[in-house]
Image 1 (cartoon, rainbow, N blue to C red):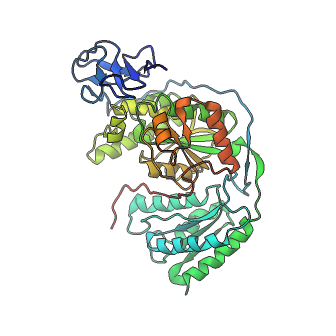
Image 2 (cartoon, rainbow, N blue to C red):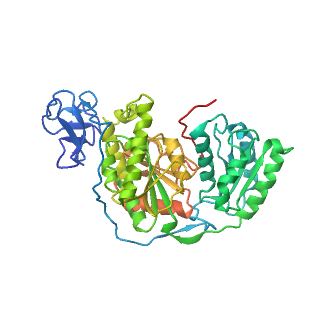
Length: 467
């Protein structure tokens, strides 16, 4: 096996695939002398500038490289993206009256406000004794918000929770409110009314004498109906996959992210959809994504998303390059540009067909970009809320979390996969495209492939004041 790799002929750094002297595995070394102030190039793109003279063979990292990110960069549109040859694939899913098919037959209990979290948890626990037929589970999707939020936050928590209720994996949904919160039940009902769903129930705890008995009566009815649902063969156009990375390392842009990019292309070729998010982890590589936008209109929406997110940082007094994380750096990532160039490989080579706002449902087949931050649980929740039935989560450091849809952990390196067998679902160092695609199909067909599938978590992207 090679000890080093050079990714692009334009590069002036290579990557150690295993520890080479003082240079840790996954870290960079200089292919030639790099003078102080000169560009450092990886993936054929600039990832930073040398802070001092770097000799050929020397370790290249944070001690001698700084970001070259320009916060005021001007963007252009020069379309270039591949159109993969169309294919046909199917999976066994639960057909829905509206929207895409589900890959799970689940019941969600969603609190409108954190005050009723315990009520929802008690209901979910009690419902486990009622499981039968094809029901995959009853889950309380708790959170700490829903009251005392102002402005956009108050609107966005409503949008997020309603979008979660519309996820195809939910056969039935029970909204539980308190009765005096800002995120009131009337607003939830009004938001969901245009969708015409008959699989959603609502009640406020202050309006009933015994909230547990009231909720259990509803759940009993839900379970009786859901137990009779059966899987049917459906086209891949019914499938939407979320693309996310977390705890990236020096291998992520070489193995896990490019491999997931191949799965994204394969899904799109079969008529399905994928969603890329983590806007701050596009900084430094955003122009490459802009050039993949399918039209000028999509480009303008994408550019606005990037510029708004940059303004969000600078208005708070923070530089947009407040990244990578300590774990990223330990794994070999030096600058945000390097992290972003590796991150965007998850989207493959297909064009970007749409740009979604936070809490907005996916509309187009193909790759969409979603407005959400890089935080693992917030971003994964946003992906699932936009309609993804599963999330492919690449990682070089490892994590046990899962959002409320199956979240497959894809390791960028074999040592992580071997060490954390209880977390990792696939070792991407093998670059086994067929193996990962088969895992995706098996998950869609109902196999509990995700090691973390017993976990259901959501997180909210809060940007404003809490009273």
